[in-house]
Image (cartoon, rainbow, N blue to C red):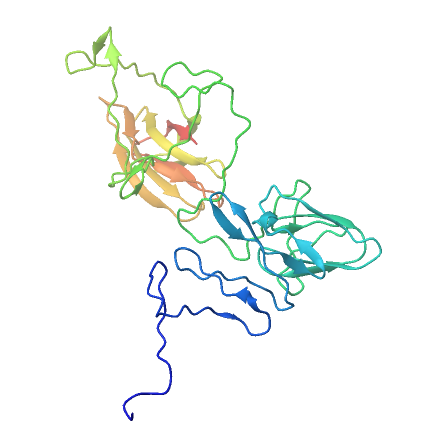
Length: 357
């Protein structure tokens, strides 16, 4: 019949079914036949056996309650146990003895390569040690310098900028064991400092007669008889006179000066000194006139005072508190001109008093 296929219908038979009209299909190796069937466990999982590229079976081993894949690492024909591979630490030391062969070691930290000649060396993580010490450089001519203790020597290429820059510390070794920083009795351990007195405007002015904003002003605490000085308890002051310089009392007399005639009394000041005049004294038995004058050189004169006597007052005195005359080195003089104003001849007398400084 046209609606019936000549091929047999095929259905798979599930395990445990008794319908023998079904057909159970198995997968087998085409060469070995029924001896090489695809294995399926009770849970319906397919069992697979692994092989490497050379056809060697890949095994597994127990790892607790599980099966772990057993894999071997072959480097240059040498089997390496992967369980021994781990990150090295600073405590790990790798020692290589290359005999007479050159060696090359790759740094594990940065990947750089260091080479050397034959010899035994030890390597720590991050460093390589051998008989030739390595030198750190900037890649050109300069290299780092170390002192005898292995400390790095740093040479500042530029000056330290102004401001509060601190590099290291400074030790002072000449201070006493115990330093006295309190006010009190000054001893061997007392710190002494030199202070500049001043204010925001500048340093204090100590000069005599200064009255500016920087003039130092202090209050003196004086006491007399245990009490502070005041208007009713003043400081007693004793004034004693003392002569400064050389006293001068230059006396001169002239006899029988005729009526109307004159006589000059001249005192020459010592070279390079100043004459401080005190008094001019003159006298005669009759009428007398005097004229006091000064000369810077003994030839040019300036008259300063004139005086007369009388029968009742025969002596003439001229106080010279205002006369201060400098000898300039050309023969400066103080002179008294005595004129006889009487009717007959008489003797005249005079004294020039003062101090030369």
